[in-house]
Length: 158
Image (cartoon, rainbow, N blue to C red; front, side, top):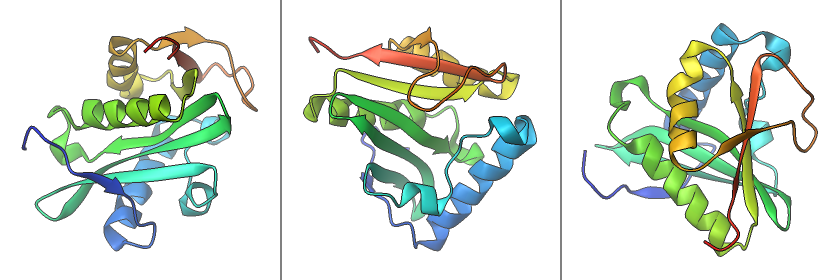
């Protein structure tokens, strides 16, 4: 894996992207109760308020991330995923840095996310905490859920 990641706008019609998203949804439904799965399918990622990116390695799409505009000062991290074959190589951190840089460019004051409480999500929660996300309550249309962790990073002054 090279030090510089090639993160590009994602093509939601690309079969490689569809496979990655299908794997993502499969993992979400395998680890969380259906009513607690907030992962988006292709139609959910295709709305105007969402920007979607992918990262490739050796011609394969191995990661993705999306940023949803909740309001002009608040974004939501969505659909962050790296393929199991490349986990632990810094792709998740690179995708997160990309989204945070874009949020700052857009003058967002904060970025929030929802993730799971299960052990499967522990590496993601640790990554988010490392970058300054702190646990908060539900935001946007989310409701309190024992299977969800809500996190936010304040970007003011960055």
